[in-house]
Structure formats: structure tokens, C-alpha cells
Image (cartoon, rainbow, N blue to C red; front, side, top):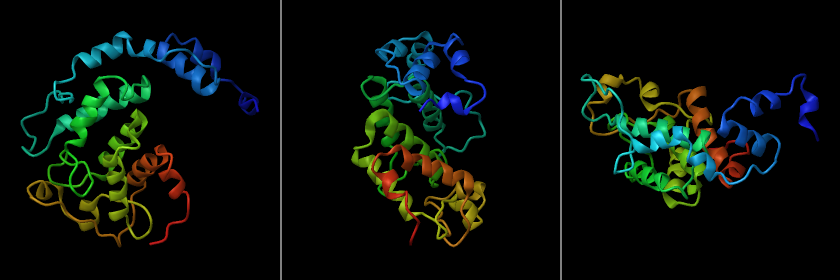
Amino acid sequence: MDWTKSINISPLEPLLNFGDTALEYFTRQDLLENPPGDIQKIWVLPEVKKMLEKQNQDGSWTYPKRGEGAHPTENYHILQTYRILGILVEMYGLDNTHPAIPKAAEYILSHQTVEGDIRGIFGSQYTPHYTAGLIELLIKARYWQDPRIIKGIQWFDEIRQEDGGWAWPLRTARVKYRDAIEMDQPVKTNQTKQFSHALTGFVIRAYASHAEYKKIHNRPYRR
């Protein structure tokens, strides 16, 4: 079926002629299903090289202008690594066959707890949305079979609200962030409270990125 016949104006011409090498590549791959050649030609673009040059030896990227007001337990470098990894994976298609991605993955997963979540951006507190976002990117970077990714996905089932969605624990427990950041242990979610649409979207995208888990969660929720 020619999907362009179902819309009034085709986006193909402006996408292909915009002058962006990566945009043209993925337009041909995803919209035209026309093999555009070796993806590694995207990985050597100047904008990609510029980001890779700033990667630290431990695989992270340094958060710019961290600010004196940040709490000592807040690891903003995880946040910056999440941002840069998102660009590299989503816009330029880098995966674990590129040497920068395994380094970034190991940095991120070094902050995974025994429970399964990735912690540190909010100090000792759970970050379901950042955990889901990071897991989604790592799945897209070919880490879907890594047991640490599976552990993270399984953690979402443990903190799920009774109505089927997900929420930020601090909000459900009515704990202020400035108080929670001083705590040594994470605040548990009140699972009787209503889910958050935005946060649930993060988790669903992580599930949907995984070939097996998207099948499991394509069914009505039953606790």
C-alpha cells in the first residue's frame, strides 16, 4: 500500500532535499524502505564526531554548568549522558557496534541498583521516567538481551500503580523533593494513587522498544 496516497501533502520531497545527511538516510530507510547503504557513513559526520570527542574516559558526558546549588548526591552526568546518548542513538543510529556506545552503556548500568532501577540523577530517589528512557535507548542500541536490561524492565512491574500505569513515587507519597534528596533510602510509591500520563508514556516506550516485552504488555492489565 502506498501510504502517501492517504495524505494530502507528501513529506518525502522536503525530507529528502533538506540537506541533512542523517535525515535523508533514515527517510529512505524508514519511509521508502529503500536500503540507503552503510550506516557508518552517518557515524563519521562532523556533528557526531564533535559529540564523541567530549565523551569522558568512563563513558559519560559531563553536565555543563552544573551549578553550585546542586545537591552533592545528584549525579547530573547521568542526565547529560542520557541526553547525548539519545541524540547518537535516535538521530544518528549508533548502536553497540560503535565503541562509544558500550562505554556509555557500562557507565549507565554501573548505576543500576539491586532492585533494577538506574539511580543517581535524583540522588537516592527512584527515577522511573529516566530509568525507562535510558532502558529504551539501550534497547535500541542492541542491548535487548542484556540481563541488566531485563532486570530493569521487570522493576517496572514492581512499582506499577494499581490502575495499571506508573507515577513518580514522591508525588504519590506527598513527599517534597528537597526533603527526599536528603534521605538515604528511596520513597516507595503509593500504588493506590492515580498514574501519571507523562511518566507512563516513558515506561510504555521502553516496553514497546523490546521485541518480546511489547507482546506481553499488549494485553489488558491484571494485578
